[in-house]
Image (cartoon, rainbow, N blue to C red):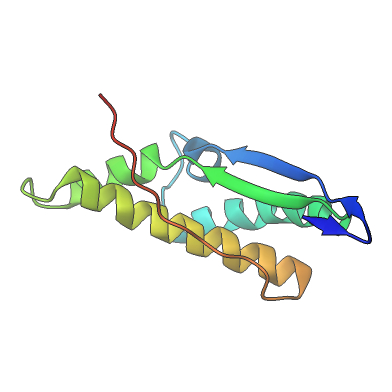
Length: 114
């Protein structure tokens, strides 16, 4: 993407699932929101410098927690999609709140691992 004839850098930021729900933590949604808010502050500060951000995140602890809570017949791919959507929403909401704008988009992806 260009702005005024110059290319605007794209910064890829990876946020681990454990950063949002650390081992040994309460694993509550309230604590997860607090962690997301702290991450969003840092992401927003990058965005304010003119960087375009591509934020990717893990969701291992979140998927594991949901898998334990669900019936055994719940498909792992659906659980992964649920937690991807949840985290994408929470991160987008928090970054938008920090920036005072509706500027984020959350996408769910599918990857086949062989």
